[in-house]
Image 1 (cartoon, rainbow, N blue to C red):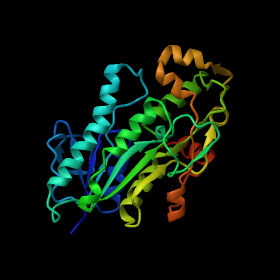
Image 2: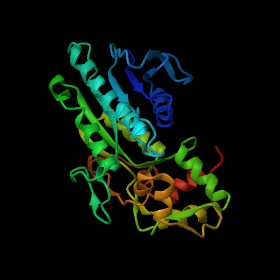
Image 3: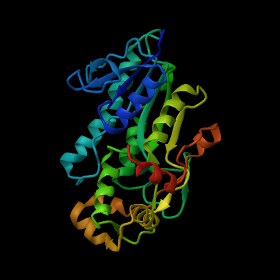
Length: 298
């Protein structure tokens, strides 16, 4: 009998890649959406978000979360929190209400490297303490919302995800377009570290974490080679054979984006220590390898 995995956020960028990878490995994919239906061909069954039904699932993957790359107004902050903390709390309550026989055995829940705040050149691993600021507190509360799940016997893995690069993803599509038109720019001093990951590695890491019974708790979903914003800008410009002479000062970014503008110049030098120590192998450990793949014709 095929194993069945539920994916919350399956219609999103990463969710679609995860569904495709699960199906390619012979698993059945159950998708959750607000309407109870969706257009992801790999999904064999649709269920409605909010009216959570996790029965007959071997595992659960939650990738839900309102985009934070917009102005952090009070209204948007409520959306950020409801789609992360609120949904996670609902998942915990639903899992707690299920019998041991019916309950999924493993749950992967998204988090983000924003947990670490602005850390300059400090190398942050999974054991590093949280940073300060709105996004760090949001991630801290997001992860704290999983508390209580241990008592159910469900193995919970929280993936602190960096900037995801992949075709169809907003980050990559925006960057490629901006640089292709000569609008690529270094952000602020450019000295801030940018934790990134190729979507194929993130997808593989999520599924690998499901399949490895020894993995639980927090893992950093980032590539092995973080880069500074200055180096990222130069490498992308060189790969696209386009100039990127511009510098966007921090005060301009803050003026345009508010708090999110400040986040763009914050530094997180994050290492995927637990994945590496456990034996996970990255296909795209370096930015040049990732860019070479992304710039190939699909």
